[in-house]
Image (cartoon, rainbow, N blue to C red):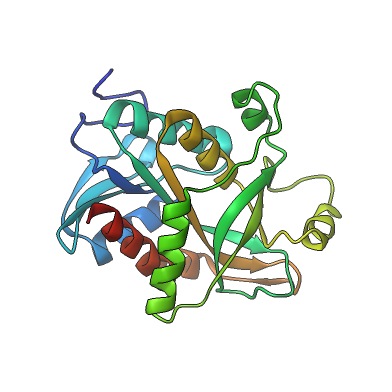
Length: 241
């Protein structure tokens, strides 16, 4: 299994590019591959977690769906790194907006992630450690967004283990502490990247405005994240230079 396949990914080392985008939704993975990449081939279909490899402006890029929640996503992050040689992981996901300063469709570049995840506590041996992105990727994302005149807000997010949690007041508490959005994977990505010695970045489009009780349709979630994907691919291209 050292060079693939693994229990969750088919193929062998070399089937994934060193830079891989990691959305949760397999339909979003396919949309990115079919609409942004060239010379695309499918490299995974196990459990319908679609994965693809192609090129963007000549740069090899992969995109792999990782599912929802830290336990699911952690499997894919770990296998991509350990068995397929991926060195840079860029999340292109969605989140719920928790701040008056973000609206439906806005892009957040996560500067860090708080969490209530039991999985991350286990990974950190019970320690409370900061989950942060790679600075050069974060800097690159903000620079590219500025060059392309794409509005991106940098700030902290919160990674929750539960989508339907019992504490509905937590959103107000998080917003009051400057948390911009809530989602279910970013702290896991940052933690595993740090443990495995690779780079990670998370870009999130606000698909649910929790403050104003607004929500995107499922088709919009799959197909209308163009600006976020543009920034992510720009970062990927810079990494390959």
